Amino acid sequence: MMPDDGTLAEAHSGGRRIVSLNNSWIIMNPGGPPTPDKPGITVVDYEPGDTTSIFLNLRVADIHACYQEWKGKGAEFVTPPIDRGAEIRCYMRDPDGYLIEVGQSTGLLHGKLAAKRPEDLPG
Image 1 (spheres, rainbow, N blue to C red):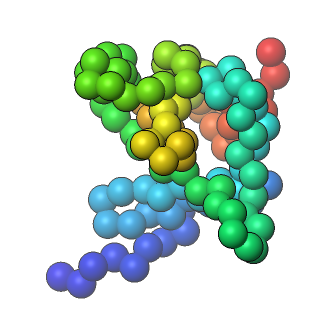
Image 2 (cartoon, helix red, strand yellow):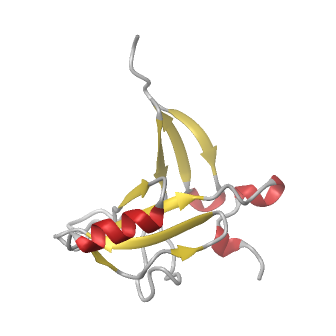
Image 3 (tube, rainbow, N blue to C red):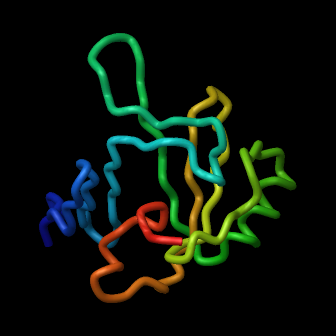
């Protein structure tokens, strides 16, 4: 069997793309403003030069258990997990200071709202 070269699964306004690759998803997000789970942190779009704006996004089956285990092993989280409706997520920093998003999908969004990020939803 040949490896999957990746297939565009979703394209959202603002540049966010989701690519299906083998049995995984790669989420490419051009950035966004601070959110409750990363207060004071803005993720910026790539600009050529000597800077980077890339961070890793991991999905886990049980975010609360993962948070407790990793925190107990010394991981430095920005905030505890925050329920955002369609996902429960938090951010931690790697030893070099880069953000790593750790989240659990909840499957709570349906219909036309399913294509929107929680921060884009009313209320």
